[in-house]
Length: 156
Image 1 (tube, rainbow, N blue to C red):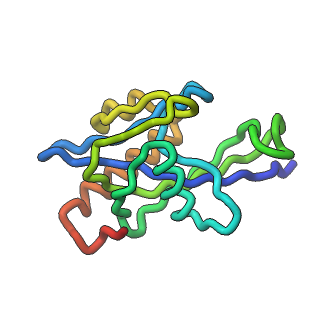
Image 2 (cartoon, rainbow, N blue to C red):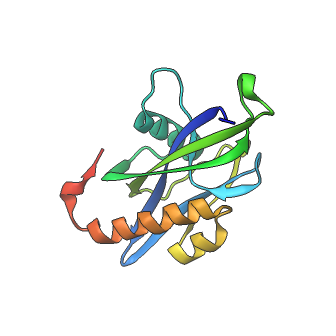
């Protein structure tokens, strides 16, 4: 049986303090899980536009630099919470970009997103609620460390 699909976009966001790289995790009070900012696209949006809008809505961050060619997609079975598919089994596809933010000024809405943390890679791996997100973080961290000081691979 082929399940209907839903798509969302977001990012693994990091901040560098000296030699220390910290990752932004957000807590969804609605779903009771730690993860990365992401959400569903609106009509006419591409993946990157969706990610930018969702990140700003969920965290207030707007100073993002994207790591070129760093796009990770995971898929998993879920129960839809949206529209005509609400309550039905779906195949969820989530795309994550890798972004640097020089700001640590995060503002959550305390409605859907109720908490946030800047944490090390290992702390993030322990905190993330799903193995798929842990895999995304491992891959993102490897790319970040490889390209961190190469300014030509970062874009707005």
